[in-house]
Amino acid sequence: MDIRSKALTKSIWVFHMSVGSCNNCDIEILDCFTPRHDIERFGIQLIGSVRHADALLITGAMNKKAIVRMKKVYEQTAKPCVVVACGICACSQHMFRDSYNVGEPLDKILPVDLYIPGCPPKPEAIISGILQLVNKMKKGK
Amino acid sequence: MKTIFYLLIFPGFLFSLTVGLLAGWLDRKLTARLQWRVGPPWYQNFMDILKLLGKETIVPEGSKLVFLLSPYLGLASVVLVTASLGRSIISPLDSFSGDLIVFLYLLIIPAIAVIIGASSSRNPLASVGASREMKLILAYELPLILCVIAVVLKCKGALQIGQVIQYQLLYGSIAFSLSGALAFIVAIFCIQAKLGIGLFDIAEADQEIMGGTLIEYSGLPLAIFKLTKAVMLYVLPVFIIVLFLGRDLTPIFIIAKYLMLLLIIILIKNTNPRLRIDQALKFFWRIPTVLAGIAVILASFGL
Image: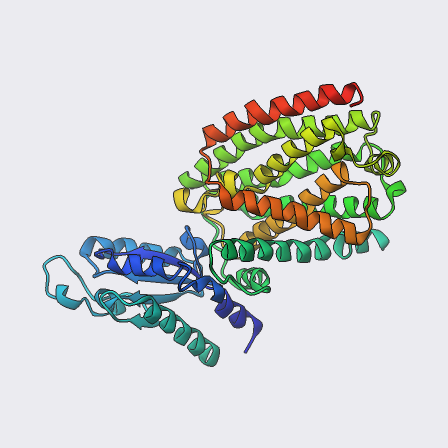
């Protein structure tokens, strides 16, 4: 495996994007950075600007207005970048599937690399999901 | 040939970059420990830089050439300072007269490069960051220059790093005199503002203006800016050590003094919240400027 992808797996900068979530997933994501879970030991950081991001962490059922913005944000990220669907809403739209205001599910719009189910997912689930993604990147790319 | 070696390898680029990135890791690790976390491994900052080198570079609409060139301007000027300062620590007689003024000028250039790069990206948040950076420069430059003037007066008008070191070899460190102590305290605050960390993380402010001046940068230019920050984290404390604690400049003492200064900076960073830009301006123009002015007056009387 070349040094580029090794460096990418050792230092993942996450841009957190909410497309109509109820905030529970967002709170659990912040929990990953607290002393108990401390995800920074794997080199993972939350950053402010999409241009710096290596991973887009998407939470919430896509409503029709948010989809347009989300596509724009994905176009603005510097590639290579992975897309993570966090929470059951982002994975499969959950109970909002046939609502009047939601559009297509996430994986029909963007190439999703990792699904983390749960309503909301526990911080342990998020960490285990990210480590699985890292292992997949180490083997695959 | 020798000059290129000095510039690129030993006191210059490669050495200062390694030390700076390790110091950056120490900052992150200590911050994590103070917050009861574990913190990243020691190679974390090297990995961040390596990763950024492998990413795509996105150039926004606007002045593309200036946008891509301004990071190099900042890095080049800082590396020049590290090489020259390192040489004058190793052999004080090698320094040229007036290099203190040159250093002061070269150390402003990284901030100016950030302003130029941010303004050329045409992003509204970046322009907010750039205007804040500009105000911060206006705030901290005056007390810093007054501190250096106090040192120069103390050394009987020596504008050369070598002469400052020799004066301290003969008469003891400047920080242990009355005027020197005042100027030293002010200088510690000024280098924090120059580094833009902790109290004075105003221009970048990840939580508020989303990366501020660096918002449009990605890939290689972002890595260059991060490297500039790392080299600044090495060269500014060393500059302060040479000016104020320059009595014993053997390697062990330099490392001990550097770690001590770094620890003070990290502790101040972790125990204080970020200031607003107007608070920072008020802070610098009231207390540190007055203290530095008093230091200059005391130094002119030889205290």
